[in-house]
Image 1 (cartoon, rainbow, N blue to C red):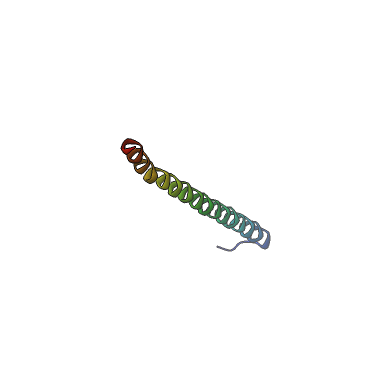
Image 2 (cartoon, rainbow, N blue to C red):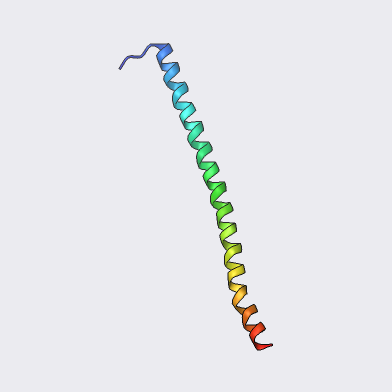
Length: 60
């Protein structure tokens, strides 16, 4: 597969662009997962606190 210099340059640029896009998508996914994990932890903290509050209200 003998490519001319111009074709190799275009192929290199396309490959590099694909690498940059994939890297950005992975970084965005990592940030989204970190955000989702924080939201999930906050939800479970709230959910875990709620039954105790209800129990205290019934006892009073």
